[in-house]
Image (cartoon, rainbow, N blue to C red; front, side, top):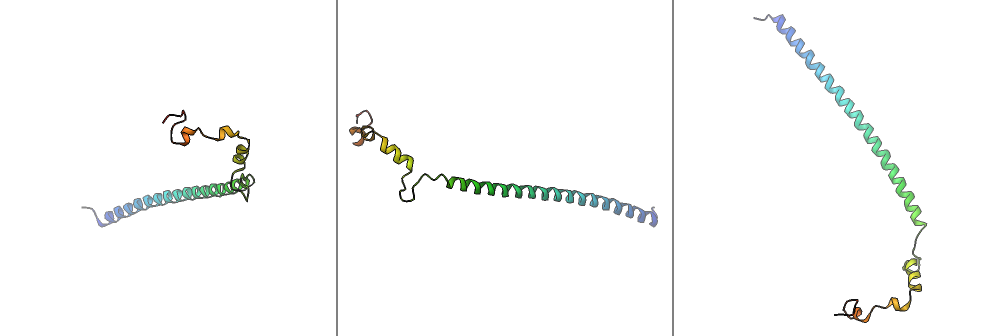
Length: 105
């Protein structure tokens, strides 16, 4: 039979081993927390950069508005309409009446 001092010694050895395992686990948790913090900071920086780029793009697009403030017809469409010959502007009679482009129903 084991003496009481041997039992105490085994218990202390067991407690020491468990303590070392817990310490190693704590270190792993701390390392993962630091890694996660770094990733969150990186994502935050990327999000701020994208927000700034989106704002810059919005400002650049505002300079190239194609619509007149009083007329909602895009300026390119107005230009095409004014240069389009009258014959091309009209559809064939058969198409307007519900037939196909060749004039057949």
